[in-house]
Each structure stands twice: as C-alpha cells, then as structure tokens.
Length: 233
Length: 368
Image 1 (cartoon, each protein chain N blue to C red):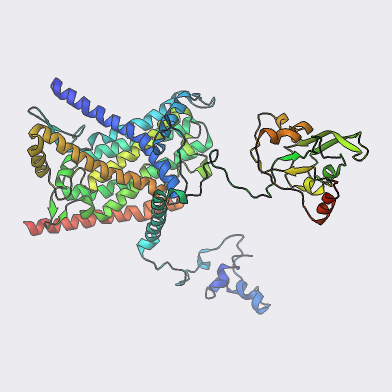
Image 2 (cartoon, rainbow over the protein chains, first blue to last red; image 1 turned 90 degrees about the horizontal axis):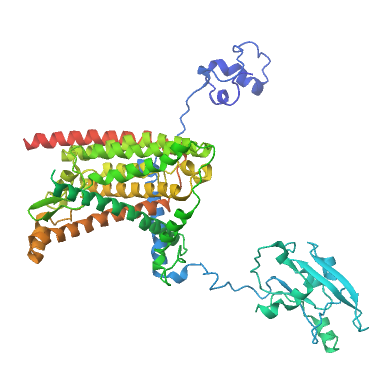
C-alpha cells in the first residue's frame, strides 16, 4: 500500500494517512471511505512529521561531541604505556626468540621420536595401533618378522609425515609398547616437503643429534609399573 | 646579490635540505620505536653494526639499503611517465615549504648580518599554502597513473580531504596574520618575542588558542596522518595511492610524508609557539650574554645555536605528537572526516576570524 507503515503510525494526526494507518487496528470496514490517493512507492510530503525526541538528542558540550575528552584520555593511556616500558623493559611480554625460548609445558606435543631397546633396536613391534589411532593418517608402517620369537614383529619401515601430522598425541596413547613419545621440539622448518618425511632411522636417532626436552610421554599407570616389574619393558 | 650573498644563500638552502632529509630516518625510527613502546613491545632492535643496535637507530640504514637494491618495478598497466614522476612531485613541494621558516635569529659573518631563513618572502604564509597544496598533485597523479582502483580511490579521497581542510587551515592562520599584521614568518616570530601584560609571552597559542587547535588538526589532515589518513586506509584500500609503488619510489613517498610532517611541525612552532624565541629571554639579551662569553661574532653563532635548539625542541614535540596521536586514535570514517571538516572546523575557523577582527577593532579603538 501507500506509506501507511512505520512513518504514519507515528504521526497519528496526519489526516491523509489516517484511514490506511488505523485500518488494521480497528477492523474498520470502511477502508475505502477516506482512502488516500494511491501512491505506488515512497512517502509523500504530508506523511512525515518531525517528532521531538529529547531522549535521543545529544546535549553534551561541543568539546565532548568533538571527542576531546576521549582523545585526551586515550593519549594518556598510550603515553603511560610508553613511559612504563621505557622505565622497565622487562615488563614487556616480548621474548627475544632465537636467544630466549618460551618454556613449554612438559606435556607439550612436539616432534615425535621412537624409543629404543637397550641394544639399540626400536621398541616398536609394528602392531599398527598408532597408525590405526592416527586421525591424520600420517603414520606408515611395514612390518617384518623379528628373529626373537618373544618380540615377533619389528618395523621394517616406520614413517611419519610431519606435514600431515596434527600433533594430537594419540599415537603415544595408543602404543602398547611405549615405543613412541613426543618432545618439546616445535622448531620445524624445512626447504623441501621431503624434509618432513621422517623415516625410522630419523625418528630413532634425531634426538642424539639435537638436544630436545621430552614432551608428551606415555601414561605410566599401575599396569605399566606391573609390566615394568616383570621385566617386559 | 653578490657572490658571497649567493654562497650564503646556497649554504642555508643546503643546510635546510640536508636537515629535512635527515629527519626522515630519525622520524622513521621514532615512529617505529614509539609505536612499539606504546604497544608494549621492543620494536626494531636486531640490526646492528658490530653489535651496536643503538636502540634501533641502525635499522633505517638497513631499510635504505633494502630500498635501493629492490627491483624498480613499473606495473605494465601504469602510465609510465606519470608513475615515475608522481613521487618526485610529492617530495619536492614538501622540501620547498620549509624555505620560509626561520630557524634562528641572525648570525654575523664579518660585517654581514645573515638572517637564518632560506627566503624571507613578504608573502611567507601564502607561499606555504601555495606550495603545500601542490603535494596533493603527486598523490592524485600516483593514484591515477598506477591504474589501480585502490590507488585511485586513495587519490580521490586525498584530494577531497585536502580541499576540505585547506579552508580551515587557511582561515585558522588568518587570525594570526590579523593579530600580528604581517604575512612574513620572520616578522611573526619577532612579534612573538614581546609579552602580553608583561607576564605571558605573546605566542600565537596565547593570542589564538582556537586557531592553534584548528591549525594543528588541519595540519594532521593535510599531511594525511592518522586519524585522517583516509588516503591510505589499509583496511579498505590496501595502502591507497602508493599501493603499486615499490623500492625507492615508495621510499620517496615516505620521505615526502615525513618531510611534510616536519614542515608542518615547524610551521606550528613558528606560528603559534614563537618559533626560535626562548620564553622570557629576548634575542638581544641572549646575544649580549653570548657576546660576553665568546665575543660578538661567535656570540651570534652561539646564540643562533641556542635558538635553533629551542626551535628544534618545539618542532620535535609536535613531531612526537604526530606519532603519539597516530598510535592512539583510530581512523575517521569518511563521512565523519567530511563532517568534521565542513561542519565543525570551517564554521569555527570563520567564527574565530570574526571574533579576532572584532577584538582587534576594539583594541585599536581603545588604543587611539
């Protein structure tokens, strides 16, 4: 219809819009009686009334409206930070990275490594538990038969794709032999994608070349201690 | 003009140009370190010469080397001639404006008394406005020649902003011109050496506080600095008019911005804070004191040095204000910018001119 909605509803004393505006409210059947000339779109000049809304008027001083107090307060905040940082450099949260490193939690899940038996062989028995648990499907294992019947299997190949890995630690949880664990190493950069394909040899030995703190480790609960006491581990 | 006079003028011009160019790395350093400390971080502190980072002051050197050795790329769609010309057109007016700013009183060279100002034009302030306005041509040209929509939008905004704020800029200085009755910056500085009622130095800021405020805000807008850097507006326009610029051409825009800031700060100091005038110490008194120390010739040099230091301190404060404000206030929305310029600053500036005129008339009437 015409401009009956919104604008007219607020200006009840405008005669032209009245019939249409109140039509719905009263259920008045005589809609056609005082009907305004039909306009297709928009609001005519008589339909708009300036309504005084003192609650919405900005009665603040010109200076306040020109943001002056807010600007002064803001400048105060910034200069306070500057002066404090000039006085006490140590309070700045910045860590000078290559020289100083962030101290991560002992449960940090960084780059994996494979644990070894006393004779240097991998503890892994190629059971595929980690590869099965892995949500990123980044562990690739080829099993082979171990000469020791007590051990049964060993990994001929054990590859982790460091770019696929999401460092969730599920492989560590899944491992029944405590053969895989994580470190706090997060500095993983390479020039080639191949650099992130970590094979068995690499996973077993990289910690010998680079000193890294241990990260997320297998849970050492009662079961493990019992098995440990039986000399299985 | 004889050969000696020419040599002296040349020396002064070289000194000013050298000084202006040298403020750029210092300002870059101030901006980066200032921003960093305001934001609770150390800022550039890596680049060093033999282990001395000098609180990051070596960083601009590395920046310059990088700018010089970067590929000088011209986008294939750009208008090559104007694209290359634009940064230069932005830089030259920024350098030229400073010519009329007196940075100290006078020095004696033999019998000659040399005013320390490159050119004492009798249209001083008008020259400043005329040349400063030319800077926007470089920006518009850069935006247009880059053939990039962001650049062009930045350029259009910049020109609209310049027109809006130049009115307030000019009118805010009109009060000063009326109060001191001259357009010559040297005379304005000398006039600010007197005192009002024997206590207050007759600085422009005392005579024209509203004019001072308007002028400072307008200078922020004219130099395209935050909160008025709509021409760059990283969030909307990449970086506006110099989006397509790299290497030394980009650096030239940067230099122009910082030199324009320096000139703006120098003008604020000259017009409203007494230029090289030391409060409560007249130039004569200072010269007499230094002459007593090292004789009249070298005394004038010493006095000039002290005055130059005073001028630099005032200028330095406003340069820091530019940085301080930039890292405090967010950018205006475009309609807010225009609203402030046309609905607040312009009427206020006009009112200021009228009030000044009436007051001057009354004071003159009382005086005669």
